[in-house]
Image (cartoon, rainbow, N blue to C red; front, side, top):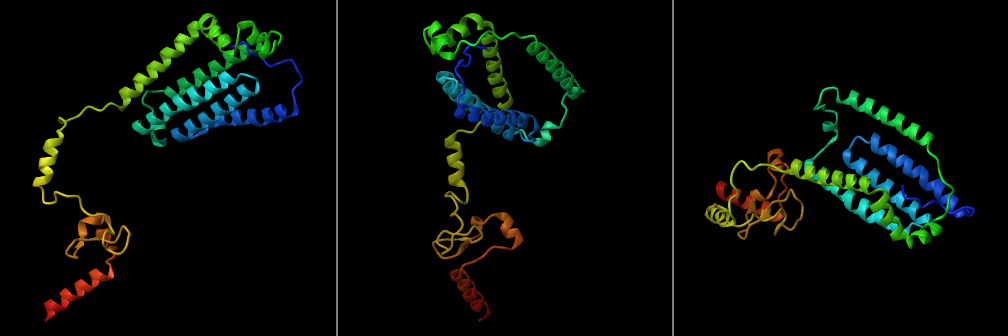
Length: 261
């Protein structure tokens, strides 16, 4: 982790209040990532966690790091996650289907092992004396220079591994969203010719057009005053809930009177 530690000066009341409000929010949002049943909700909770971390970075004087947290992670990576969820169509029912046998047991064991390893590493960690953000920036020649030096010297291997993981995720997203076409794509000229040769070369009027009403259950009126049944959804016609205007009702009554006469 980049050694941009907090300053040794006493913490103000505003910083303390902000920390005790934002830190629990980040923890709750991180827990909700795991407990949410829908993948979209988990992605939104992750975005909340990232935004809170960005605010904490800015509070500690890491303005560049906070802006990068919002622009790169919250703005770019999270939008990539949401687009993948939108294209793949993952829902709650898919998350309970085991594609591999005993994958939940393996996941629980690996998670427990990682937790034990993390606890052991944190318990044996030694923290150097805090130097403050200003002193760390001055030693490296600036905030951006300090981050660049840490990424491309001390943590260059970790940085490259993370880059490989992101590229693998992008390739996996494209592989999941790719669908093989069963038939060749028809060009636009052929589609236009078929449409002109059909019984309805022009689009049907939308419900309510010229019908003195804008409801979806009111059929549109053609130029001759007759109702266009095709403008009303099929389900409404099957249910018998189509509503005609007074003009169409009067025309139908005249037709019935003419047939009786």
